[in-house]
Each structure stands twice: as structure tokens, then as C-alpha cells.
Amino acid sequence: MSAGLKALVVLIRASQSVQDVLRKDIAQYGLNTTEFSVLELLYHKGEQPIQHIGKKILLSSGSVTYVVDKLEKKGLVIREDCPKDRRVTYAVITESGKTFMDDVFPLHEQTVHSIFEDLSEDELETAVQLLKKIGLNAKKQ
Image 1: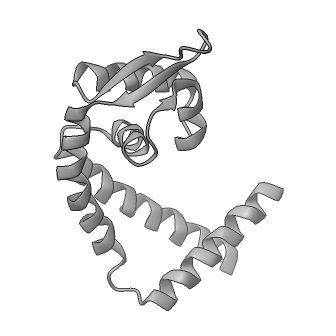
Image 2: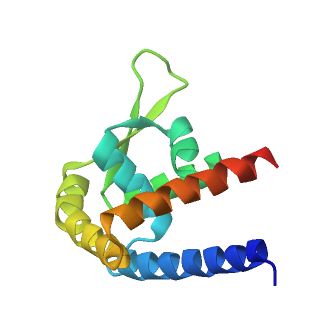
């Protein structure tokens, strides 16, 4: 097996393992990873035009609408019309959503930290640089 092919297999398996851990962690809070991603974006960045959320977390516009609907039913998000442009609708985290994320996000952050705890700061920085390099090179293809 070539070094490139071996690196690809290791990268994909590592990615799947990380996603499995995150999916399991997020599921215990009653959300799926997509719902959590939207809620996390609103929690950290504030209200967002629904049309722009998909680009920020890599979702199709139809999926964003569906996810916002689910979060709205759970009382974590509301929709607000833009007063300046009737074509724009914002997704806004509710107080209940903020309280939920205040409780859950630190626990989730601990899970993320535990994934990388065996790496030194230098190793983490090297990993980030290498993964960026791989991603940028893949975009050229």
C-alpha cells in the first residue's frame, strides 16, 4: 500500500472514530450533530440569516430549514423576520436555548478535549497545519 493510500485510510478511520464519539456525546443531550451545530453557531455567533447557516456549517438550504424547524419545536430557536428585508429570516437562539448551551457546551468541550488529550500542544499545532495542507491540496484537484 502506498504511503498516500495508507494516510487516506488512517485519516478516514480517525475521522469516523471522532464523529462516532461526538455523535454519541451530542445524542445524550437529545440532539443530533446537525441540530447541535446550528445551535452552537447561534450560541457563539448570535442570530444568523437562515440562508447563510448552511454555508457556515456545510448544510443544504433545505436541511437548514428542517433543522431550524426541529430546534424551534424544542423551544431552543425562534425565527425572526428581518425588518429591512422581507426576504430574510433570522434564526435566533432563545433564552431556553442559551441556558441549554450554557449547561451542555462545557461538557461537550470536555469530550472534544478528551479526544486530543494524548497530543501535546506542538503535536496539535502540527496536526492542524498538516490537515489544512491536505485540505487545501485536495481543493486544487
